[in-house]
Structures are given as structure tokens and as C-alpha cells.
Amino acid sequence: MDTLEPIVSINNVTKTYKRGDQIIPVLEEISLVINKGDYLALMGPSGSGKSTLLNLIAGLDQADKGVIEVGGIDITVLSESELSRWRVSNVGFIFQFYNLIPVLTAFENVELPLILSDLSGKERKEHVFTALKVVNIEDRMSHYPSQLSGGQQQRVAIARAIVTDPTILVADEPTGDLDRASAANVLDLMDRLNRDLGKTIIVVTHDPWAGKRAHTVKLLDKGVLSDDSQDTHS
Image (cartoon, rainbow, N blue to C red; front, side):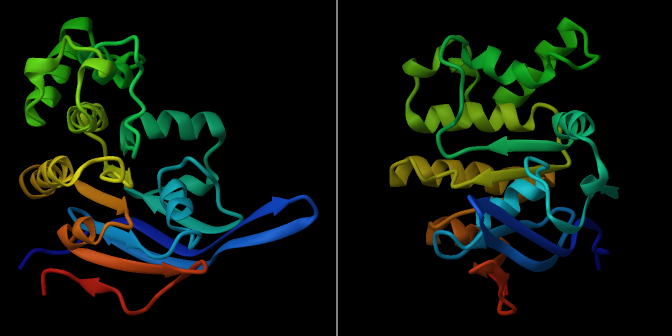
């Protein structure tokens, strides 16, 4: 039997936002462990704190209190510059609207996370080719985003997310802007990244189809993590 190895550990995390003089609670005393190789879906109604929790895990936002460890590193004590460097090599981002740069080709968009790395130009090209091949979009690598369908753009975005071989992949509504067929293709690809490459995936979604692909579903409501999480593979 495989030994479970925690890759993300969240302990008593609280997050609020200020709106004028008003303090808006977003997350309350959240504790959660995500194991290496897991595929977790965070679900719940709009405004429940799902994207906020994802952003905290990815180091895009900072908690008011509590501890978040990713790969054994407490990211809550890192400075902004340390967090930026940490994100480059540890987090792969997949967004609803792809966030591709229109004036760059698919190849150049995927190469972006590697520009500040220590890799040589030849090594960067090899990494990009490999990532594009994994998502089956290498035949479109010279195309610009405007020349690609939504599903193809999301494949390029996923290649960009995996090109640094990150510790975790985080996806915020990755199928939210896609038709059903394109969404199914992207979900198949995410399944493969998890199953064949062992990638740890954390996805925020309203889409029940996307939720069913995950190994585990955690429910958030009004900033509180529900105890009745679901193991979709049981």
C-alpha cells in the first residue's frame, strides 16, 4: 500500500478583506491536508472563498493568520520577492481565460516561465517542446492565440503551467469558458497529467462534470470547509 505524503498542509488559516471601514470575513480557521499526487476539487457557491483559498495555496495572496506549507516550505513567512521566486518553480497556474499574451506564439507563451531560469536557450526549447507534446498541441506551436480555438488555447496554457515541472498545479475554473466537448478534452488532459505524470492538482470549479474527475471534493460555504468531503473514487 502506498504511503500518503502530504504536499500541502494548511493549519487554521483565516483571511479577511477590508471594504472601507468594514472587515469582510472570507475564510475562517481553514485546516486541510492535500497529499502528493492527489487531484482535489474545491466546490461551493459563489463567494464561498474557493478562489481565495486557491490563491493562498499558490502564494498569490497572504493569509491574516495560520500556516500554509507547500512541499515542506512555510510560504506564509516568505517575503514578496521570495514568494515570487518560489511560485516560478513550484506552482503551475491554469486560468479560466487562459491569460495568454496575444503577440506571442504558442511556443513563446509556454517559454515565458523559463525566461528567468538558469536554463540555456537550447534547454528551454527542449522543455517547451516536451510540454507542448504532452498536451498534444505541438503542431500549433507557431500559431498566435487568436489563431487557436478556446480548447487549443487552454492546452497551451496547461503546457505553460507544466513546463517548469512544478510541485503543484492550481486551476481556477479551467473549463468555465469552454464548450462541453472542449471542456471534456481539457479534463481528459488533466486526468492524464495526474495519473501518468503524478501531478498534484487543485482545481476550483462550479462544474459538476469537472468535480467528478477529481479524486476528492472539498466543499466550501461561507468561508468554512465542510466536514462532508467526498471521495469520488470510492
